[in-house]
Image 1 (cartoon, rainbow, N blue to C red):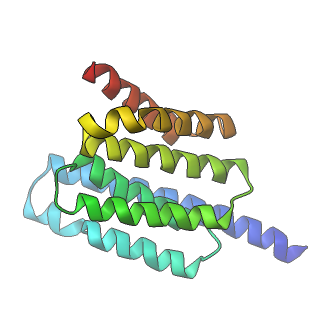
Image 2 (spheres, rainbow, N blue to C red; image 1 turned 180 degrees about the horizontal axis):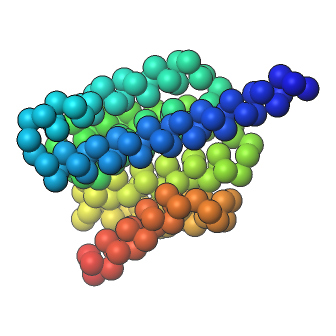
Length: 175
């Protein structure tokens, strides 16, 4: 019984830690964009270093979807911000593998299933951004459905809510 309680607490701590690391990375990225001095850029870990750190966390916590989820979000964020970059196709494929790993774990908790649906919706969004003319008509319904599913499973999922709003904003601007 004590082990189960400890296991639950450690999972919650790991999830909070992952969220904190992701937010710090985002804040550092924002700061680096606002302050382009060499000192600020040297202090920020590279994209590859961030992915490598999340992969190490995944190895340390193989039963947790947190590190996998954060990897997927980071990969897809890169693709969404740099859709024409030569690395985007590789990152999309890697994100798809990460999503597959999470799906293979068959999450039972609504919050974890919501995170998976969020990641899937973001994946479809990234596909659309890379080639709006071809992929927009093909995947926009899938993206909307995944974001809706994420919010049905966990109405407090702010990431899903934010990505859904950005997606709708982008779709309205494209009309």
